[in-house]
Length: 163
View 1 (cartoon, one colour):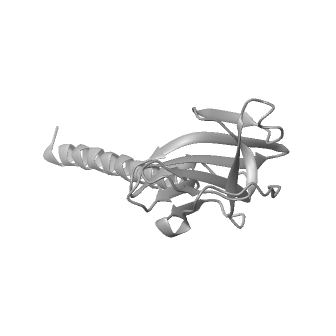
View 2: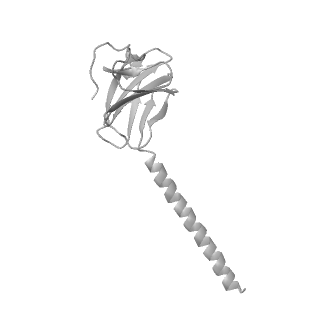
View 3: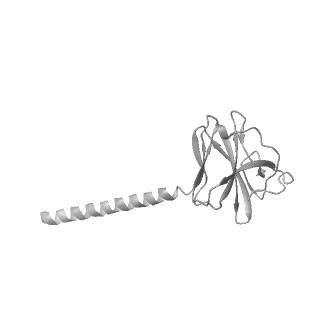
């Protein structure tokens, strides 16, 4: 083969490799931008925190837990586009004993759980726990920041029905 033909083949292979590299970079960017469509919680304290989340998907309520967040870290609780406008969070400070709670009562338990329904928690063998409401304003993704200032003593027993 002549030198010009070899140079052509070398340039063609280089162009194909470059096109594949660009395609891979575009695919990686698309995948990483979709990863931002999540519900995340950041622990902005010096303590270890346990988290539970409640949400309504269609007509069915679900509570899930526990996520364990080290100090000054974030965790994705729900991956992908959000399924609801309102989410409910309960957090417990493992090191200092405080909590992030509210008056929207849902079912939890001490061990890892996924519980369907928020009615009759005690009769069904679960704990009845007060969650605080997070209004995501129908965004595709949302991040909640837990801080020491938001922490409180154990929640009261007043009842507010989740939306």
